[in-house]
Image (tube, rainbow, N blue to C red; front, side, top):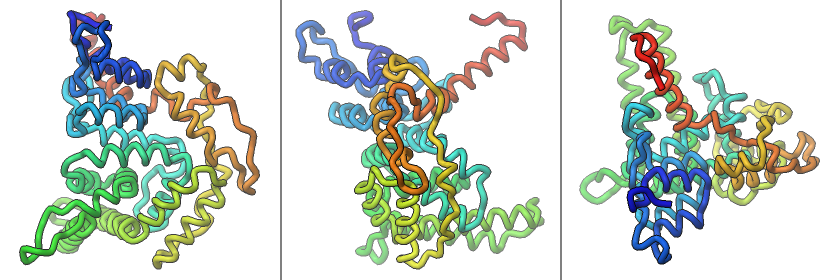
Length: 362
């Protein structure tokens, strides 16, 4: 496909949205004579303000992301424009969409600032169904600049779930990211930098008083949030490698077994978890039905296959349940996505403003 004798951004992103790996490969390599020398730019932006890598992150297509990386796609491009939330990296898209997963929405809202909430969050992220989302986030993190700073923005904003997703998925990069030196020769890893920033935030809050416009209750909530963030960093810093290894090696395990093993790992590092805080009978996959053609159109075929083959197909007693037909299950509804959701919001805002001003819209 070509418009004006060039493979446009819209054309390439359309192929990415269908997870059409072979088509994207041909467009990027430009080796077939039929293209007459035309090729696609992996760092082109479409009229809606995002790049091919954002679309691949939206679809959680690890293979597509790898293909784009091989052909020079940058993980540091950001969304821009009136039709989308601006300044989003592909990494942000993956993290934010992970936080829209049904298990997260069903079990972690509203957000609570206490240690049992953090333990519950860690347990949920270690479930087999979350692996594909963590894998995507991890891959994008390997190519994202200033990873610790991006993570710190989530923490500063009090976004515990996003912080946990990025910490757990990208811990290897965070451990190896060095941005300062002590006495000229000792480097700090990312976890040390984060803990230092948390310590400074905690000290500042201890000295903050209500005359600054904050009530005593608001100050206590801020302090509790900082304490929870510190606990989260401490858990992943100490137990993260063991948790990650377990996730990678156990992609088809009953939920009850996963939760028990995660508790054991955390307790082995001195963290006092509350066993039984998650009722496995309340972990339900998405039940919205869409056709096989719709799955292929939205690029969710591989994601569906991966998720329907994992441990959500086991009951609380560990008995394996029958596999549903992959085309009948939408594990990740297309309406619950970062780019699509916010684009719709922006378009609705523009239509509302036009109607308010008496301007017809098309």
